[in-house]
Length: 574
Image (cartoon, rainbow, N blue to C red; front, side, top):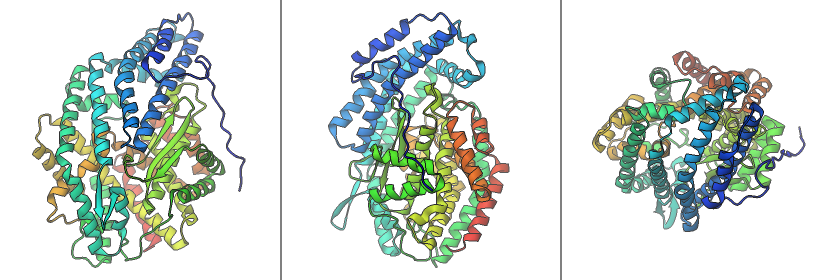
């Protein structure tokens, strides 16, 4: 089935000049001053003013995003680093007071009651919350936190090892952990783990400073502790720490037993007395690793075909992204770790960043970030910029659902048997990642509930959570590595409390998947309709539009784990 090429609508500036140079604060500030000074005499003028504020904010945001993308694509380029830091140090701190003045002007406008209250309820709730949190005294602290985050990414991006005479990034070492040769896997795992440990003091130094600054930010904003501040700053209007604890308890009760049973099956299949950390990625039946592609171009071409099979229009959208160079997929030295999708807000276009090295997991990353990109494109016609972004908990439904919706089409990369094997690994991976999410979330709650803790306290707390949520892996002889495995989770450093969102979203995505097993067309249709809502509705309504319940207690998790268990039984030893 074919479809016409994707030809997205363009959104030329309506107030700003067609081309603007926002390279310095001196070029940006006059536009903010103009809009601050603009008189508003009616609800219609207030609505037009809101649109123009959004246009200006989007253009400035795009300047920052372009610099961030350039920096993460090559962290060892001093010019890119300097440009990114200049935005963080020279533009963002001066921008925040203007954003606060504009927010206050909107909230205090006598014409606001004349706007449609249903249309603006989500927007108003967010603006009122941001006003409550804003403190000018916190701007220097937030700037320092951004700089510390840059140092963390630079430290991780610079980690390399010498393996058999060649310098390799840690991401490039990952494929060796899938090799059947156990001695080779252990050699690689020890080499990578040793390299990470070399920087443990540096990373702990960074994190200690981050914790102190975050506590100062919370106190300045009038909170007793950082946990409550973090929930407010993440705009978690529809759940709180109690629900997060319920999620942790449900994962412990409903998911951990299945995860440990899967690891026990792996141990038996591999005929091992004990499962070790280097035994977790290899195929338990000793088959060669899945190697779906040789280079990033093949990854992009195959992903385009998968998206077209899920929905022809989505395939056309991805082809457009390829043509417009809105992808950077290949791993290389100096590139920041991980993967992300970001948005060039002024153009209303997505950009996908990842570190593909030819492993099966790269397919899931590609489908995942593709789901985020389709979300951006689905909502790009929304005139209110704040509604073009959904809450993270639903953004991740968009991405994780695409991993599951695309799984039946993996024959684009594999023979039938290998496609089933990859699908099985996806489902097993979901079971195994949920306890890790609970561990990271519980750890962050512990960190900020225990101000003044020592590094030894922190390691002890981490190990206790690994005991609670972890598997049956034997870490004997590598206790120090285990105690510091949290260092590799960049969210703990860069985005505090941003991790349970993945668990909440995974439960939403599994509900989309369950519906697709029975009626794929209906599931995809509801999924796309929900994406088009952007962030214009509260979280429970977004989930409902996608055909899912916004609930992450045992009553939701238990049947989903049962469904996964049944699907794994159907797949057998694929």
